[in-house]
Image 1 (spheres, rainbow, N blue to C red):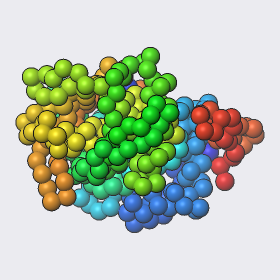
Image 2 (image 1 turned 90 degrees about the horizontal axis):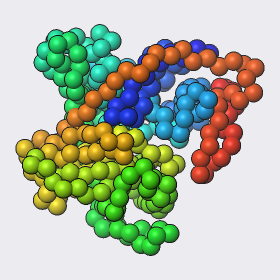
Image 3 (image 1 turned 30 degrees about the vertical axis):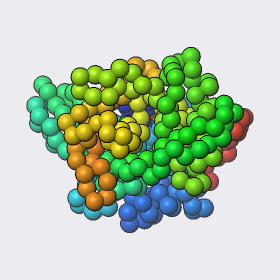
Length: 330
């Protein structure tokens, strides 16, 4: 087995784009292909996901996307987002990376100066990455996701730190939000445990993907300013400010009357990188948002699986499943 990838990071969060060696994925739409990947017949594909996200080739925070055909000619590409624990319905930082890659690889023609849209079919719908260019280089990418909606406010969740009340919003993936006193590298162990506990309680009822733990900072002249970390899947930490999580935050800030059209949310990550979120307007399905950041290529890889390798597709260490998780691709 030989798997080829081009890797990017968006505001510090990795995104591994699989460009070669992928098994055929049955289905007529991206959503159908994700359903196949989640089902019992997704074995060969899931083996590739494990190979690329588990150690020694990946790590707990690894993220990526399998390139697949779009649903129709209205989009230039489709993608199945994956991480160490499975497949997500949306991924903002991945959409930003895919927009940059589509232009830089020549898949989508772009001007030397100006902007070009890249339309991408993801499991939750069609999204657009607007790639900004200057002097022949990509300077920023803004993504417009599916409409964002508020699902619940003040939901009580019992944790080891006591009962907390969280707000839940959907921006292609569903997030709980909770204000905390501090978001910093030193606070990450406690924040990871808190986010994991909240998700465990709400995942069944809300199909919750992640938990955005955010610290309020002084407003900027353009609008609110927050620092956040998103805990997703089985306790993984998003190094970026989280793209779709930022869109979910915009929905909640709009409901609170803290942001309006023309204003911006400055959303910092735990590593100091920034996404800028804007409210564009409303639709019958929810709020229209745009989240802007930047992605950078970090490498090109040819991963192999030696049939004699006793670790197979790799291993993982984590709070829920320490030790080996390998086994050869079926």
